[in-house]
Image 1 (cartoon, helix red, strand yellow):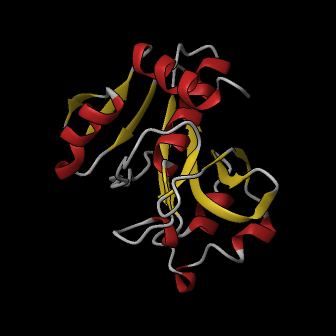
Image 2 (image 1 turned 120 degrees about the vertical axis):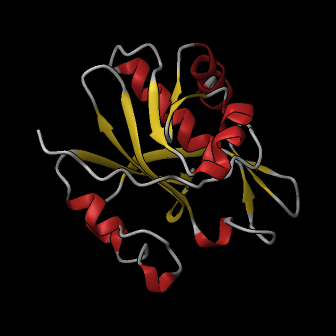
Length: 176
């Protein structure tokens, strides 16, 4: 099996919401998560402010790439998630909020939490009891412990086990 280079993720869980929440009005918007398509890749390039090469993720047959959109507004991607289905858990390869959902002036809170909850949901659907893992940047390890209930497994590896995923899935997908 080919050893993969693991990217250290640096998403910030700004707020755990029920969907995503407009930072100006406070209004919540229900979301949906679906597979990224070739058409989607045109808007998720570095020239459009995205930090990662999502075309490369999309073209890697070992990975599944998903987009988060607001229901009835599927043309505007709020965030992206790349994951690999391992034999016993889901590995989050990449997670990125849209450029307009990052920083002090972001438009929506809740995008990273929503995508992590989706990875947990996928883990339950595959019979992995909610287990997911990812590689974190050193400066965010404690943040993931506090916000997601993740465990620092050593090095940069983070693991989320059954208890925290149950809470995240229930919060984000209770009505779906």
